[in-house]
Amino acid sequence: MQLRVFEPRYVDLVRECTRAERPFGVNLILEGAEAGVAATPAAVGTLATIRDFFSLRDGLLGILAEGGQRFRVRQTRVRNDGQLRADVTLWPIEPAQILPPEFSLLATILERLLDAYAKDNAVLYAAPQLDDAVWVGCRLAELLPLARAERQSLLELQDPLARLGALNMLLPRFQRDG
Image 1 (tube, rainbow, N blue to C red):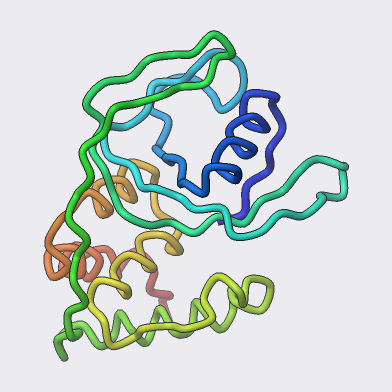
Image 2 (image 1 turned 30 degrees about the horizontal axis):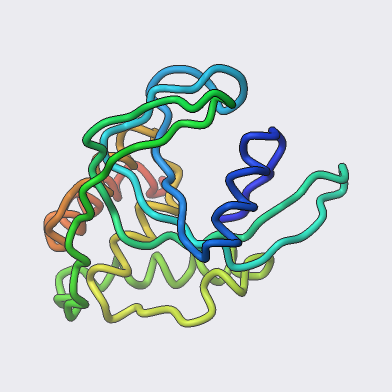
């Protein structure tokens, strides 16, 4: 994911994560906003590791971060600078799983999405794993135009086949008539 770093607390976070070579957490905001007072995050998020820095057209810092292991928030606190910190429990990493044939249409849809999307984001999807049920499900949940709550519920599923089944149920919404 590409992020625009625009608040001093986030610049500090980027500096701290870079120096310590550690990830930061990314959670859906349930209440509040990205800027200003600390927001209320969803209970499940993902770790993100900074992979690159760049300057944006407006002069602000941009970062390229790679999502990683998911976690559940146990407790949060707000630092004096407004930065939200949390104690988390890491979820086990879902092992790669061969994509069952009944979900091959999802891999085809993802491949087309990547062809269209990856032109400007080749570094994000340089090594597609279209035969892995985990990778296909997570990338579709990331790239399809879903409501935030739908995306969150898909990413909270811990069974890759259940995630693919839920995505299959959403497919009619994306079909064109005629």
